[in-house]
Image (cartoon, rainbow, N blue to C red; front, side):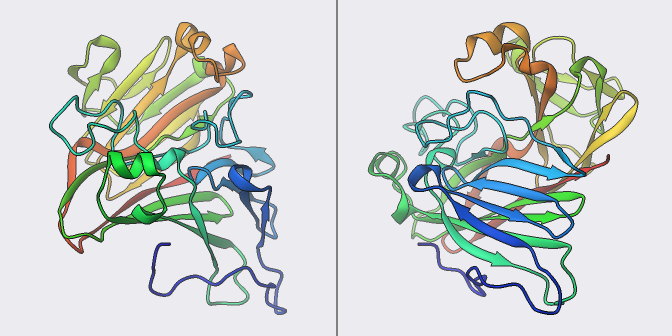
Length: 318
């Protein structure tokens, strides 16, 4: 269990002064999820397996893409939504690093997290947001994950739902005697209507590693990124905080980084979509784009007792 000062309250009845957010836990075992709904109708669903956000609705519509074949029973990482990548991004270093024995993208997205409770504004009349906290620590890992990364840590993952935005923030604490290095990324799948009408702005002049072109380094020379084939790029460091997804000439999402300098842009396109057994429908790549904020260029180091915090605020601009 993760210990936390000012731990949020457990589920309780909303204040009589005003209707508050409704928070429920549904399902059992690996399929358990937390659902929060604001009085104004916005909602978020978080699967305890991986603390994966699998739905974020606002303005009557869904903002996240989730594969029709996504495993929601704890059998594998979820394809879609917002998986949490920690403590390594992509395939780990082959040898000589603490993460070398871990699977791709680490263990956070395939571990069961603890729901620590909800918190709301101290103002009883303010019903415009609700924060859900989730915890994962070294003592709650599976035996396999613990043997692969035998370091003492605590994670707090906070998901805050507001009327027009969703904030997701990670707090990483070194709770052991030994320093450790890690990477972190939020693998966000944004739902769009037509990938051919999408542009991504806010990355002009930024260097990126193009994994489609043998991990070579390039500089973003155009003011926007247009996607007409497979894209897998890691941008960073990014000086400005906001990346915007524009669809059909109109801003659709702002993705605002907080203490994170990197962003991955990903779309599998036709062949890779067909090759992934849990990606459905095959044409689903036309309705999604991944804008993934993180700290993945190099490593973040934490000494004993040190804390790292970073995350994002996604704004729906409809």
